[in-house]
Amino acid sequence: MVFSSPIFLFVFLPLVTTIYYLIKQSYRNAWLLASSILFYAWGEPIYVIIMLIIIFLAYLAGMGSKFAYRKRATILFVVISLSFLFYFKYLNFFIKTINDIFMVQLSYLEIIMPIGISFFIFQSISYVIDVYRGEVNVQENPFKLALYIAFFPQLIAGPIVKYHDIERYIDKRNETFKDVIGGIKRFIIGLSKKVLLANVVGKVADDIFAAGVGNIDLATAWLGAIAYTFQIFFDFSGYSDMAIGLGRMFGFHFLENFNYPYVADSITDFWRRWHISLSTWFKEYVYIPLGGNRRGKLKTYRNLILVFLATGIWHGANWTFIFWGLWHGAFLLLEKHFGFAFTPKHAILKHFYALLVVVLGWVFFRVESLQEAFAYIKVMFGITQNSVIPFGVDYYLANKLIICLLFCALFSIPVKLPNCINKYKISLNIICNLSLLGLLFLSCMYIAGATYNPFIYFRF
Image (cartoon, rainbow, N blue to C red; front, side):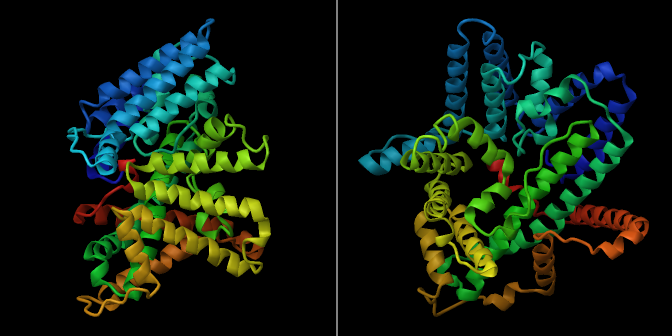
């Protein structure tokens, strides 16, 4: 079940929300947990067992932290959790790599990866480590811990919610009318970003990449890369907006996951703004434990590369993701070593540099192999010029796409209204509310008539 599906919008969400506010507060956690398990089981009934096993082991590890063997319990849980992740997500990739290196014919296993396994395992690990460090209290109620890990707004595609950020909301929260209305507005914004922007540019990006590097020209290659750059941002940030909005409707306040990443003026700045929950997770549980920047330059650089290697691996079992992680890590390392001497001096050139690195990185993220990525980039820079092109860039640049790209560019930057407009605040609020209703109507119409509705981060 996805947030932009009719069954979620018109059946699941209204039913869950209505019952939640009709029952007593003492029953609300239980209702949310039952609803979350149903939400996950709707598409992955058998893999609910995997999630419940992880929750049970996290509970045991947390309880074990109260005794003398707490370090062993923590290490054992991390190892077991990552073993689950390795089996479902990386085992066949490991087998393929062994086959390629040693020229053998090891058989692949028929493994279907549980949706959202990377997210709920990382959340479980954060809880166990926080308990071990003494940063949070042990959650002695297994059902409350299960709610934290399985809560449906962030269960299958994030953001990665750390236990210490929402511990207080699990035990006691104050749901207000303002929260409910604010959550609904945030959800509509996220749904609109996903359906009206990401889906439109995503369809064009898919068509261009599917055409193959031998059938596109320079302009079309750039259009495909830019379309995918907007797709992945509005797809994922839209989902995060919906998750944050849903959480707020039930009294939970999740931290922001995006902060206009495409206005970054460096790769360092980009990672302060992009997928914030993942970058802070790696910072807190990998980078700092490795020593961070406290043990000299060489070890700092080593730690940075290891973190971005892990970031690439986390995103998928393919060398393209590993290269993408190292690509960003290399530029971040260069910026750290050379400082402002590495990046351009002019502000506009700084932004251009950061965007160029990001867009080229997304090419590796999007394609299936490194060879295809390098071939695509050669077309982008005119190194490879295909003589016969079935469809030129004009074929893809319909009026609908042009308008969508303009809106994507507009909504990728923060817009600050002049102070003189503040006196019209009431009128602006009315206009904004009416606009949100219009966006909700358009989104529902699109969902009712469209067959293209993927969520990119579901596969991670």
